[in-house]
Length: 343
Image 1 (cartoon, rainbow, N blue to C red):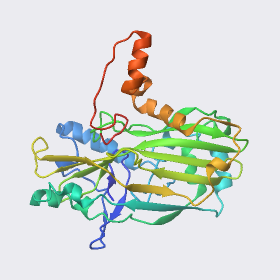
Image 2 (image 1 turned 90 degrees about the vertical axis):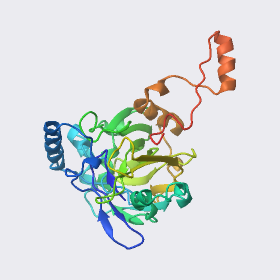
Image 3 (image 1 turned 135 degrees about the vertical axis):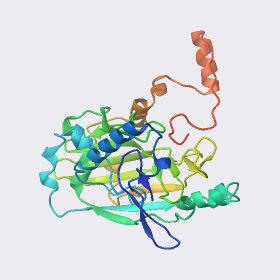
Image 4 (image 1 turned 90 degrees about the horizontal axis):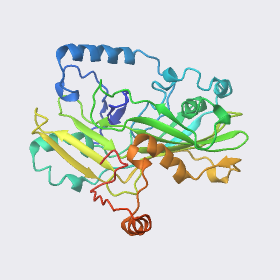
C-alpha cells in the first residue's frame, strides 16, 4: 500500500507480482510532483515543520493491514496529553487483540480506457499490482485502542463528539482536498463499557519515484470500538470503507510533469477494505444509555460537512414539505455523494 499523505504516517504495501515490499513513505523533497509547488523559502519552512513533526513520539498504533500501520495516535496525544491514563495501567499486560483484514482489489476493467496509454499503465502500476492486503492479520495491545476514547472516559454521554485527529495539513502541507482528520462520537455506555463510533478521512500515494504519483482516496473509513473501561478488554473493533454507494474511491494520477494537462482522474467502486476482530457482537451488550448508530454517524458527519447541518429531503418529501411550509424547492442533481471524500 502507499503513503498516508494526509496523516503524514508511514505505510508499506506488497507488490503481489514480484513480492517486493516497497516503503511508500519516502522523503519527497527532491520530487516536485509529490508536493505543492510553492516558493523556495516557504518549502524550506514546510520541510522544517515536517521534520519536527516526524521527530514527535508516536505513542502506539492500531494496525490496519490493508493500508495503514499507524492510526489515530499521531498528534492525538499531543493535542490531549491527559487522554485516558486511567486506562493504561490495566492494559500493560500480555493480552493482545487479534485484527483480521479483508480486501478485494479494484476491477482492472475500470482502467480499460486508460491502459492503452503506456504512460498511464506506468502510473497505474501501484493500483493494478495491488491484489492482496499487506498483512492478513495482526496482534495489537489493548492500550493502543485508548487513542479512540474521549478524555471524559466512562462519564462521556452518548452523542458526545470530539476530534480524534485534527487536520494538520490545512494551508501548510500537501494540501489537496478536504475533509481531513478523524472525528469520534460516543454511541452508548454501560456501567463499565463505552461504544465509540468514528470516521477517518485519508488519502494515499500508491507510487514512489521514479513512477509518477497515483493518489488513492477512499470515501471514508468508518469505525467502531467497544471497550470495557474496567479491565481494558476490547470487546469489538471494526474499520472499513463504506460500500453502500457505488462510487466510493477516487484515483488521480499523472502521465507527465505538468499537473494542469497531464492529470487523469476516475472514480469507481472499491468492493472491500475492512479490519475487524473476531470478538462478540456489540449489540448483545446491555447499554445503560445509547443512541442509534445512524444518528451517531450523522453527528460525526456534521462535524466534517457543514451542509449536513441543513435537513435534506428526496423530491417527493421535499414537495410535501415545501407545500406545507409554503417554501420554494431548491433541487440539486449530483454524480456522486456530497458526504464522501472520493467525490
